[in-house]
Length: 203
Image 1 (cartoon, rainbow, N blue to C red):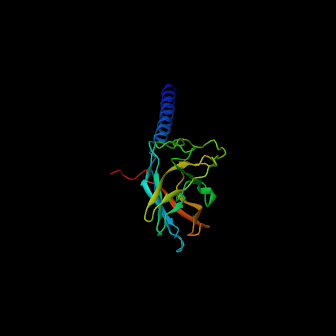
Image 2 (image 1 turned 180 degrees about the horizontal axis):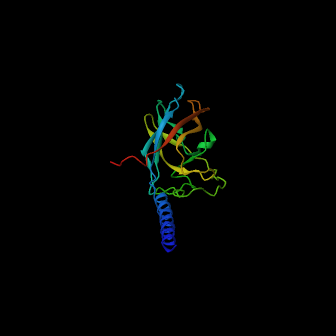
Image 3 (image 1 turned 45 degrees about the horizontal axis):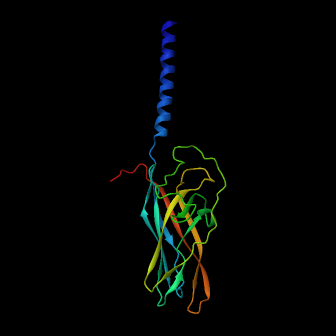
């Protein structure tokens, strides 16, 4: 009987230790995701502007987020006022919820060294998403000149999961004036892709 009690105690101790180890390893699991540009819309031919999205910093980790560059270029022969290629918005506005984009100069943008605070949590307190409503403004561009915005990828607090993998669509109405000063508007957008690369070896 004494030997049986000792074995049961040892088994119980092993089970508790294994459980603690399992929790520790799950809490310390790596978090590495990679962002890429999956698709960008073509610009209607008669508009003298080129809009592009480029990845500046692709990986999201425990210590950094991904950075993009949105660029508007004057492809016409006259000096005009141009809006940013993209300023800020949520993927839920044009597709699935999951990620947010902020220009670093937006008043409500996180800082450049933002890191996703959802990492390691099983769930998030799902609150309302709030945006400041300022106008992004325009910039005067000479022919061939361009202007860029640095964009941060930020986790959407209104849904579960920490920057979930998948494809995310963003769209914005883009306005440009013609030679006579009349504004014309077209919809322009792009799709980002988030992949989990936690198991890939770093170079």
